[in-house]
Length: 310
Image (cartoon, rainbow, N blue to C red; front, side, top):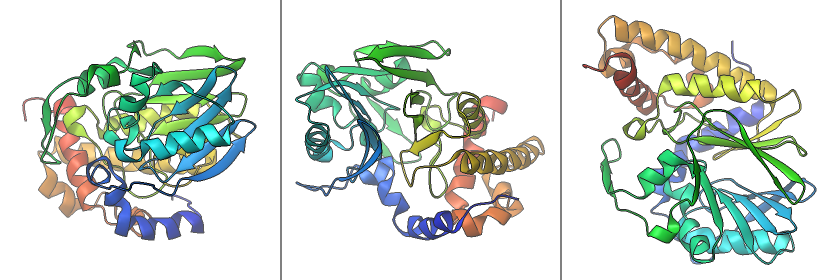
C-alpha cells in the first residue's frame, strides 16, 4: 500500500480545486503583470522559484544563471528578474526546457532574444516550431518565433553532462511520460533533480498523449529517475512540493499497480468507459484526488503503443 504523509494528503485536497489551473492548458490563461514569485533555497547557489505557473530551478555560475523551466510567458519576466536578483547575477546564460508546454517554455521568447543557450530534447523543439492542435485540450498551438526555439538539442537516450562554472549538470531524456520530449536535469553537487511534469508532487498527472506521453512512460520514467538518483536526492516536480526518494518509491509502486490493471482492461478489449467502471485507482483516490480525467487519458495514451490499430 502506498505510504504518503499528511503533507501529500493536504496538498492533494488543494490540488483537486486548483490543480487544473496549474496545468499547461489552464495555466496558459493565467495573466499577472507582476506575479508573486516565491524563493526557496535548496543548496548554495541553487534556488527553487514558484509562482510563474511551474516550479523552476535556478543555479548560480560565473557566466550567469542556469534556469530549469521559465514559467508562462506573461510571468517569465518576474521569474527571471527574481532569479537574477537572488543569485546576484546579470544574465541567464542557459535555460533548460523539461518539455514543450507553455509553463515550461514561456521564458524562451525573452531569453532567446538575449542570446541565452536553450537546451531541450529535439522533440520539444519540433513541437514548439510547428502548428498543431491538441485533441484532449481542444486547443490550437501556433509556431513559436525562431529565436524562442531551443538552440542546443539532443536525441540520445544516454545521460549527457556538462560543467557550468565548475558545477556539474547531468540531463537525460525520459521515456515519453508527460510528452515525448521530457527530460530530467540533475545537479549532483546539491543532489537535486528537476523532473518537470513527468511526475507530479501532488494530484494525478496530465498525460499529454497527443504529443507522445503515455502511462507506460510514467512507470519507465520513475524507474529511470530512481536508478540515477540515491537515498538523499531531492526531486523537484513541475507541480507541488519537493519530493523525497521515499515518496518517489511510493509513486513508482502506485503507478505500477495502476499500469498492470490498465493493461488487463485494454487486452480484454476495454476502453475508457470500461476503465472507469473497473476503478483501477480506487485505493489511491483519497490521497491523489478525483481520478476520472487521469483514467481516461491513461487509457487513451496506451492505444498508440499497445493497440495501434484501435
